[in-house]
Length: 132
Image (cartoon, rainbow, N blue to C red; front, top):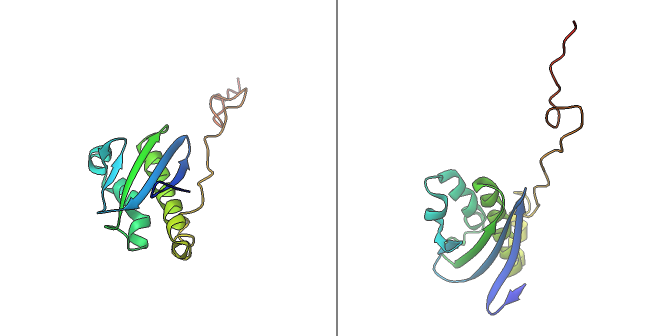
């Protein structure tokens, strides 16, 4: 949805939520008031994961991206940001859908933590069996 010259989208993964605003600019990515490098530190794989939708659509230096993220861990937040950026890019230019959809970037990853069951130690782990 467009607001004040910016395009807004929400990305989700596990418990992580990323609110993403994109606007035309120089390619700065700001996450929770920090640059992407400060936010993710030395995690190069996660930085690449966040930039992946921009690389596929060849828009690396065309947008300033501002993100507010909460919940989950670093990896889940990076995936939520990736999902939000993908949705915002499609909102900006619907022709990007043909590039992003086959890569699975517009589909929310629905995998969740399985609930613990009674009589078990965790979701599936059983107590040790003793014959005698």
